[in-house]
Amino acid sequence: MKSECLRFRRTRSLFLRRVNKRRMLLFIISMLVCLSIIGCSCGEGSDAVPTSTPFFPAQRDPGGVQMLARAEGRLILDEGYLRLKPIFGESYMIIWPYGYTVRLEDKTIQVLNADDQAVARVGDWIVLGGGETDLTEFIEDIIGQPLPPDCTGPYWITGTIIE
View (cartoon, rainbow, N blue to C red):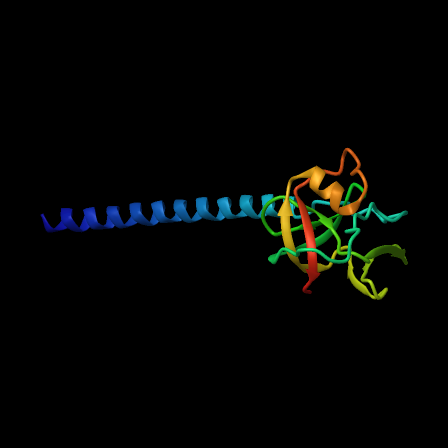
């Protein structure tokens, strides 16, 4: 009886080790799949060297109400548009503050503030104050011109550049 009990414990112990190894292997494979998916989605945007400045929608009026939400992510160039790509979720088409401009210098796209100082470059991690909308007509009113048909939202109306 005692030997059968010991044999049962050994068999049970080996079974549990195999199950735990299988679970661990399954967990590792799942994590690798997740990381590869995240890695692919973080590559949104073009790695090609820009040859011209992108479409750059900026607010046409210096005053007005500013939204105070916070968004952060990588400044990317995606099919000719500067977008904010957060870690998770879809990217935002950025509507820049009044007086901001863009320039192409040494094959790098730079965003300049109203004092003509570079505040961001494509590839930088940026933090913006402002708010989100999907209303194209509202954006067109803010920037004073129609958006190109392929310039889709969501849109981030920037009040301030925090970092």
